Image (cartoon, rainbow, N blue to C red; front, top):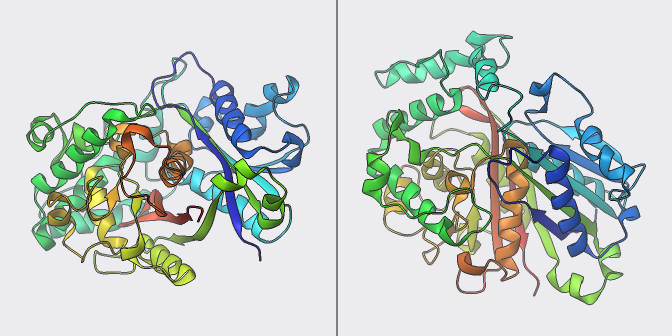
Length: 419
């Protein structure tokens, strides 16, 4: 087993890129990562492509191969690369990264690529198509298996799951989870709004973010209700983007120019965990088990983490994830956030980029976009959103899908800056 280093990572900005194709977005991400890595393109022999929604363009397969095909023809991307397509819901990008790291760690090759892309705005298809598919319960294969635990949780807190129409299944489930947390721990809508207001305000200086305007807690609470207690400002917007990351082992790193070695980031720890269907807040949920494994791998603890980019598909998610990651006690995520502890200059900076709430959530690209934000911070290159105090340890948490009362899969990564 070898150490793994991030030597090149780049993400496009997130937005409504109606005139840009998957290939256009991937080309920008790939060329940006390659320029940072300082390697010959031909050294890339294996790549993993994260994506969720391309099937809704007509069920075409070999998605990564289709996306890079025009780039190969133009000599922009090397020919003969073995591309593995990865689909893990919102964690697709992180799972692609996980596979690339494992490939290098095992010594199969010295260098590997992971990239992810998503277009959630397209004139050729209705925007709610994927939501209708999800409404059936993971493609309609077994709706009751999907909805059963969620309906039980809803009944426990005196409500019902709203279904049908053009609703977002994910937002409806997060609303049930939020109500459950509120009933168990006294979490308030104001606490959720504090996380949203922080992240919207954090995004103002981030050129990669889709929304870049400040908000107050009152602004967030006054916004249109999506599914009580969640307002629009608490819910991550759709977006189009791509991101790419190149990793290598120590042997390859030693042969690279000093300017690349100086900016390389060590993958200090990485773990992936799956859902426990009936897990409640004090149970062994996927994020809890993933972060426990990472802390065991690294010898680090919550107090050693300088900044976190986590999967705030809704702002409530940020409250329970700071608990899951051990940054505060179970049930204290709301007060902890409202106190300013997670501000950019707080005890531990959480989503200093603006998070998914402001940067946007282009599903297949999200995990690597989060990785890019942490890399910029650890290199001191984050500009107006830079965390003060020379951060050295950055953590990325990326969840994908829903299984019962848990995320279907959760990937946690710790990156360490150069000495």
